[in-house]
Image 1 (tube, rainbow, N blue to C red):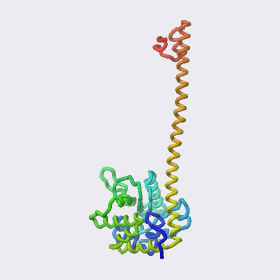
Image 2 (image 1 turned 30 degrees about the vertical axis):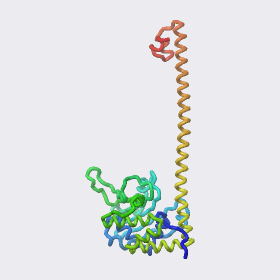
Image 3 (image 1 turned 90 degrees about the vertical axis):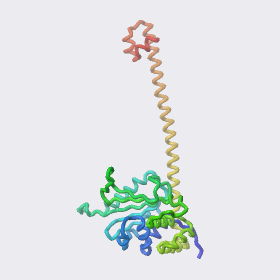
Length: 304
C-alpha cells in the first residue's frame, strides 16, 4: 500500500502515537532510560496517564498533546514536544510543573505525600538557555551547588544540536543512545530512521507504528491538522510581533509630538517672560520684583 505522507516525530500527534500508547510502553521506557538518572527496573512497568486522543485536543488550537506517565515509585513524568522556543517557555514549563506537582495533593494530606514530578521538553528550534544537547535543571544552593530537593526536575532536549552534528560523536553509551533517539525524533527521512533502527529493537518497533500511520488517510488528516496548528501559531506570533513594532513606532511618534508640543509651550512661555521683564525694566521696576513676577534669573534680566 502506498505511503500517503512523510512523518516527523516533532509533530506532537505523531510523537504521542508512537510513545504514548500501551502497545509501545517499552519504546517509551527505552527513551526514558537515556534521559533520566533512574534505574531501568524502576522505569519498567510505567503507567500511562491520559492515553486517549481526545478530539478536542487534536483539532482545537489550544489542545496540548503531551505524554504523561507514572512510575512504580509514584513519580509523575510529562513529556512535551515544542517545535519553536519562545521567550515565555521557561515560565510556562515551571507553571505546568507546579500545576502537576500540586494537583496530586489530596485535601488534608501532608506535604510529604507530594510526588516527585519531572518535565521533559523536546525543543525543535531556537533553544537559547545553553549550548547543550541535554540540560537538566533543579533547585540548588547557589554557593555549594547542593540540591535542595529532587522533587523539581526539568529537562530540555535540544533537537537543533542533533541537526548541527552529521554523526554521533558521543563516547558514553547512554549519551550515544540519547543522540540516536533524538535524531530519530527530529528527522522526517525514512532511510535515516531505518539506519538508526538497525541496532535498536525499540526503534524498529517505533518504525512499525510510523509505517502504519503513513498509509492511513485518517492519520494523515490528524497529523496535518496538528502541523497546520504549528504553522498558524508561528504566523500569529509573527503578526503579533509586527503589530508590536508598528504600535511601538506609532507610540513613539505620538510621544515625540507630545514632547514637541510641551517644548513649544515651554519655549513660548520663556519668551513671554523675557518680553514682560524687558517692559518692566523700561518702566524702572525693581529687579527683585521683576524676578518675582517672571520667574527669570537675575542674570537673564540683566542681559536684557
